[in-house]
Length: 247
Image (tube, rainbow, N blue to C red; front, side):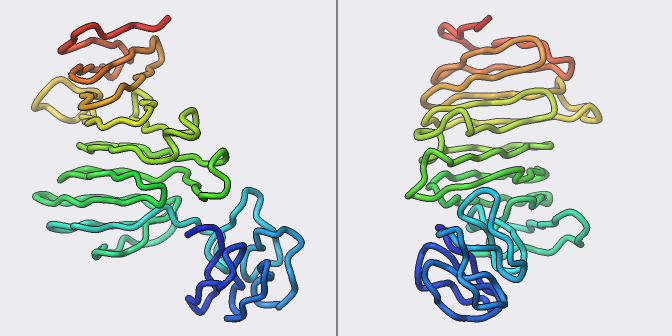
């Protein structure tokens, strides 16, 4: 939601540099929610608090929550929860925010479209969390996306953040971190209570390349290559046309 906030009444600010939390007013460059006082920071304050955001452009008025994207193409059932809140059922078009944990039920799948154009396909019996996210077209150098795959299967097609700030674009599992540059790849994580196959994290690159980082090493996988990281952090390349181990 670049880059302004939304007031407590759900009205988006007319001026892109900040929303007015709890007032419905549209004071450029953004007022402090619930007061009508103009913010010292041109990117607007956090609605309802009188505080300016630590990292621009701030969040949703009165909450400090940052919207990362929206969910669509749900088949079956998807639930979302945040720390200290009960899970609720997601519907097409619902916003996904930093701090959200998304869980897909059996025989379900969904796609998350992020504000930088990235997409994440989440398959059945999978669980992810949005750990950190920020994107604004006028501050691409500050973009960041950090997502955790707790269990299950995802397909990630990266967006603008991976191109403009690749060091701040990552998908993590309990045993590895995957860093990408403009790519399309699949990740599966099987926790230790899974008995159907070797446990750990599997990565398959469809296009581009990824670095798969564990506690012991870093492996570069290119298009057509697959890798596996055991729960103890040991890497192996399943299918390779020249995967490169990076010291």
